[in-house]
Length: 604
Image (cartoon, rainbow, N blue to C red; front, side, top):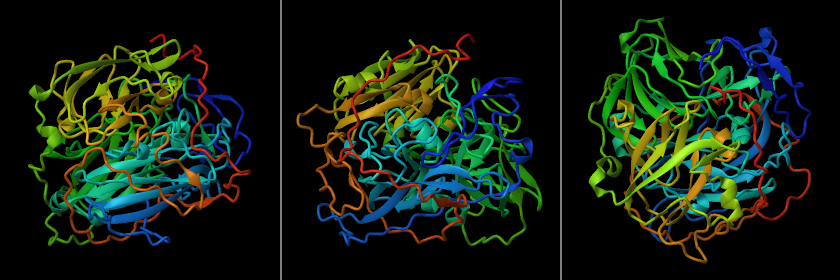
């Protein structure tokens, strides 16, 4: 929704460790959402493109590198959630406080090969309270796109308090794909992720390595938007719980950066990390983006598109052939936007590429390869005739709350986490339909655990760029989207929610049950793998999976050089908790008051 003028409520900024709010409540012109002086605002294409560093495996405890049960290799990683300051804005010394994994945004990239298990320890060394609104900085880490057991899935109410840590176990048996890890803390996911708690996670396999560019030609783009308070802190305005649309587009934590590219084919992993904004990317030249992978990995065949619709949390991988451009030419990745975004002066731009005349290694077969046939998958081979049931879900706002079939996460909490929206037999194939009768909002709907095949929307075929395995689907205004899903490989309770994270927090999330419910549940997401005090060396024994997926081990790929860190940041000395937290990872089970709130677009 392009606007010429709009009043935006700017609620100060994100301070570090209990600092005061950056500015008082202010109305600003719609040409810009930020309260920064014009001379301090970043402008497009004045910063250098960087990537997040690749996280190194490290195990000071000397744990086994081979799982004795199934013989699979295991790697161990640790990230620390902490407050820090980042040089996002152009003025030297004007730092932006963030919350980041290892103190950077985006967090370090985790890079693994299919069949290598990962145990990721997340240490919460955040301040006790968020400086903006005072909420307790409890976190829950979700590896988005992973078929993890329920207790390692980042269940929203399975929180880790400051001063505690939790070890998550990831099986990594799925095909190559771009995943991402982000905070999923109950009722505060939007503000925590917006503050910086997000990072990419790449899984490779033999097919992706053979077909697509690797190393420095395999480029991660974590794209987000932000608004800034007058002191350079992050501003926050959720538009009466509708969503946040910032006026500055960040790519890997840099505003509208410029990347130097050789005259060859590049692979881009585009993660929409915005908490609400959707994009419609296109190249300024009008040349196609060649889609090769969706959320769940490689597509059966490449799909060239001029532009496409990209919602929060979706990942699309595309190829761009820069060999057709002249030396010195600048190619922009632009944003045409979609209905019901809020757009500003420069949100029509994402980043730029400057073509250079560096020598190209033509011995690399991917330097000029644009494959047409890629890789099939079980998901894309599913047939509608295999479905045993169709379920329908309505997504809407009612009584001031975002709901799925009139149910909210508060209802789940009130049921002691027993209320489910669906009970699905393990291994069953079903059709799930999401109906969005609202004309004022779009909803990126995410189903945990599974990949799915989009059958169509409003009776029409899916868009060309959606013809690959997905875990998040753009449900547009007035659309009904049909999905074909095979449920597994694990049993247990998993979440379904809108990935407009403001909607999720208020309170558009439910859960479903795969397989029969058992009591006690060995994979209970609230009790099976609780957080422990930071620095604790003991680990939770590996549970027996509820179903054993077929896994294919593969050799570890050769290491590639670590790229430049995404932002210049330094941990805050005040990031440690001020007092000992309660020794529990279970949040207080109290419901928020469901109040009617006025939305500025409710009369649309």
